[in-house]
Length: 253
Ligand code: FPP
Image (cartoon, rainbow, N blue to C red; front, side, top):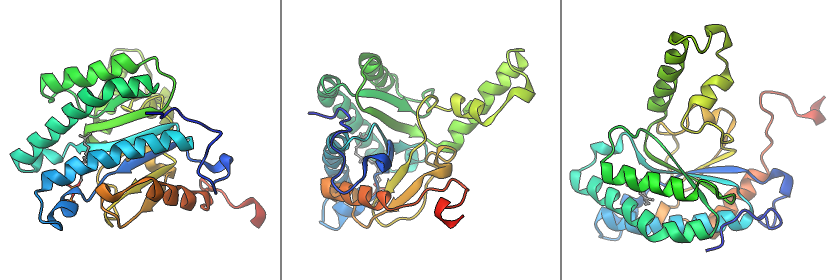
């Protein structure tokens, strides 16, 4: 699999200067994809993993540097036990089967989300993936697993408060950057583009802090149907957006 960022090959119609550096995905609609075909919901997740593989490969090819995937939210524990257990198994299979290929393709894996309540076997596997790929310099694959943005912000706040209590940081020195650096995503750029499939138009507790200036792209495809052409379409749309970050269009002055 060749997934190293290649800035020489952006999506065709996208001027290189506007190519998003970081694209985050809310991979929604696996269940609906399956039930509309009379299949068990788990089959939707299985096909969803195939769509994910295609997406990672294509993202690297068109020059995206960071891909974040919402693979299991802190609220997904509320699903039936059989589905939760299937998703845990799917993550294990993904890491076990794809890790060496991702490593060879120079992908660096980073996991975000709460770790304290993860099953030790899964935690060990995720940490192994991070350790093995830590020094890679290609695409950053950020796996949001057991992730909830509010939980992430609370954990970051607790860490900062502890540093103040220990005399390592003064209250006056707490800045936006302090919070950013203490989030699970510390050191990564904020997402330029967040894509959600399946026609749902909400963030669902995903990257709430980091999404302050993200562009959003919603499409009706269910995640298992998301493919290279769908990603190109989202990137084309992004290229035509004008990002002002609260300022005004220079041409309007
Ligand atoms: C949302 O669809 C999807 C998920 C909760 C899981 C996402 C998982 C994958 C795409 C497969 C890859 C997984 C791993 C762990 C690497 P939904 O089930 O909420 O769909 P629905 O809204 O139609 O019910």
